[in-house]
Amino acid sequence: VNHHSLAVIPGDGIGHEVVSEALRVLQHVQQISGRFQLDVQHFDWSCQYYLRHGRMMPEDGLSTLSGFEAIFLGAVGFPTVPDHVSLWGLLLPIRRGFDQYVNLRPVKILQGIESPLRRYKAGDINFVVVRENTEGEYSNIGGALRPGTPDEVVIQNSVFTRKGTERVMRWAFELARTSRKRLTAATKSNGLNYSMPFWDEVFRQVGREYPDVDQSLYHVDALASYFVTRPESFDVVVASNLFGDILTDLGGAIQGGLGLAASANINPDRRFPSMFEPVHGSAPDIAGKNIANPVAQLWTAKLMLDHLGYPEEGQWILDAIEATLLAGIKTPDLGGTATTHSFTDAVLSRLPA
Ligand code: NAD
Ligand code: IPM
Ligand code: MN
Image (cartoon, rainbow, N blue to C red; front, side, top):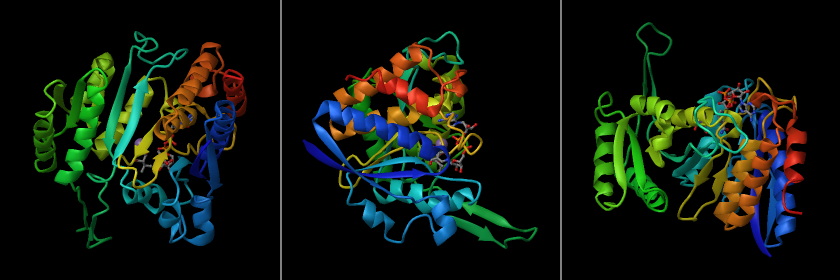
């Protein structure tokens, strides 16, 4: 049996509810598989932790996490703490500190799901977004001049490095090569006249190494419209940090809802832990009611098993989710009456025994 150390950070709001359900599923899968054991340690780092300690995690939080192979996270952020404080105190330092430069976010209509784009059925939409996850628009560099005065000026810089841009492009090209051989990049080189022309140049330059991959470049605004008008035409989409963020909530919507959208923050060199968390947030509007959809977190657990080397076991989870949805068992966001817990029970009963 292979041991894998796993840091679990439920975080805030529905993060707690969906993480505990996903851990039940992982526990079952590891038992049936017999090939691996997750050595789990829990961390209560969150907005509640912040209210008690004045920080989102201990000062040595990152070095504590660096001893783990993977991190399984629910969501961070709650109205009790300003969002930029909570996110820059926990989630974003993990992505950057551990060089998790690939944020992989699948967009796929599962069996049993009705997309708001009614003409598309299960599997008709099936692509992945590769979001740059360590730099770009999320630079943490900026500030205010003359704060609070009528002459106030606020600046938020974007940083695009050649290394940082090249490596995520190359990763996306490699993925496209193993898939349907089509890579689409999101740009905005009309309005952003330094960052995005550079982004385009690197895309074209790396692209010369991949003549077998069909390559297209669209302005992100047009691309957003194509997500709605012709989502079937995408295979792999590569985007900068902010554009990838926005495109993947749209991706979540067209696959049937944010409660379904999974995500993996990967450190491809495996020097540092990778982190697995859904696309959605802590959903304060529905927190504490046992009605959150656990599918995104469960699918995220599958992405984690893929990363740890157990794609077969990961597929068990996705198959059981689809069988559950096909049986008409759904949480209220999908028009059903199942609770977070009863939905997961239904998934558990459909896993190999
Ligand atoms: P959100 O994703 O939490 O919620 C958006 C909408 O989607 C809400 O109406 C919510 O009820 C619904 N929703 C989300 N997940 C759902 C699920 N599993 N089942 C059913 N419905 C679901 O986005 P928001 O409201 O913009 O953000 C809330 C907080 O979460 C903020 O503090 C934000 O910064 C944070 N956030 C954190 C992460 C993360 O930790 N990865 C991601 C996004 C937002
Ligand atoms: C996401 C979230 C985060 C992001 C926020 C909470 C900082 O929206 O994971 O998509 O923008 O990356
Ligand atoms: Mn987002």
